[in-house]
Amino acid sequence: MSVPTIREVRAFVVRGGGGDYHDQQGSHWIDDHIATPMSKYPNYRQSRRTFGINVLGTLVVEVEASDGTVGFAVTTGGEPAAWIVEKHLARFIEGAKITDIELMWDQMYRSTLYYGRKGLVVNTISGVDLALWDLLAKWRKEPVYNLLGGAVRDELQFYATGARPDLAKEMGFIGGKMALHHGPAEGEEGLRKNLDILNDMRNKVGKDFWLMQDCWMALDVEYATRFSNIAWNEMGLKWTEEALPPDDYWGYAQLKKNAPKGHLITTGEHEATRWGFKMLLDMECCDIIQPDVGWCGGITELIKITALADAAGVLVVPHGSSVYSYHFVITRHNSPFAEFLMMHPVPDQVVPMFTPLLLDEPVPVNGRLKLDDKPGFGVRLNPECKLSRPYTH
Ligand SMILES: C[C@H](O)[C@H](O)CC(=O)C(=O)O
Ligand SMILES: [Mg+2]
Image 1 (spheres, rainbow, N blue to C red):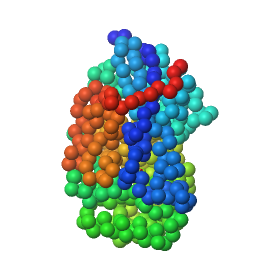
Image 2: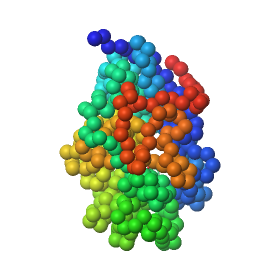
Image 3: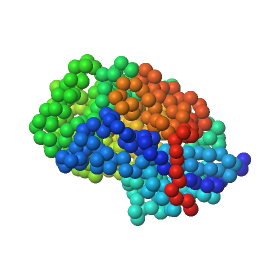
Image 4: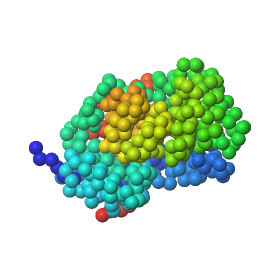
């Protein structure tokens, strides 16, 4: 059978939700006084948009094969990522056989080492990688999960991230994760407010529902140790997530030692590649790693990261990422459940995570989802979303 080659790679940008899910308008729970590394500066406390959490916007990568098949993917990265795709990475993609994803990944990664390794560049590589998996699976007329070895369970089970775990419980999710609102600069009063919010939610959801806290890199070891001990002992908090900046592997190792037995330390959504995750695993930084498949290097890299975690006895519960995560999680024994990010502003209803950018994006019903067998990742771009192509090559 002759394998098509890649005729063209195209990079587009779009604003408002989509891959950059922080790029929201108006009032939204995801931007309501959430603790961040910038919370030490009072001017940047109330809204993450004030410090530029949404400056990048969404990147859409399309790859078109010589037989006309088109694969695509969305992630965060916007215009600078589009430049990297068009002006640098395209040379490794165009002309390659659509089956040679491992080779293309290696060339994209090695050629950008001098300015890449993590962050924007690896987000961009991830976007290209996901588009390549979509293309290959569409050409083979199979869902991506079949190419990854096939599903190991019938359906996915989800916890929900949002401001209303009480509503998430009614909607059938197995747990609810809230964003922390106050950072260490808000002192004892802020700590008390954080604990009161958690306590109030525990009273609403009852004692057995999983409650988790996302700290979005805002804390230090001392604060996170105090918080997780009180929150575990008094409110049964299941895990403390991303308490520290991602480069502080030493802090995470200490925090894991300081955390009460039974309480979980989780992190990794801003970590990238097998080497970054090897640091977290080797240094025993956490109980669960949470790579984002749109940021960590794509599916090609997540396969490697997950194998390392498996050998270390650590669970992999990817961050957000909708269908790009779902097709992976369903194929791994050490990914027993998935995250669903509630993108409704309140959030009192389930809406697709990348809304409004994708069509056919599946959502959990009663906290569960059976994946269908549509080719690729099974989603389409919404023609009503205005894409622009800022660069060509
Ligand atoms: C809610 C968090 O601050 C962030 O916006 C999403 C996240 O980290 C997660 O879903 O995990
Ligand atoms: Mg998180």
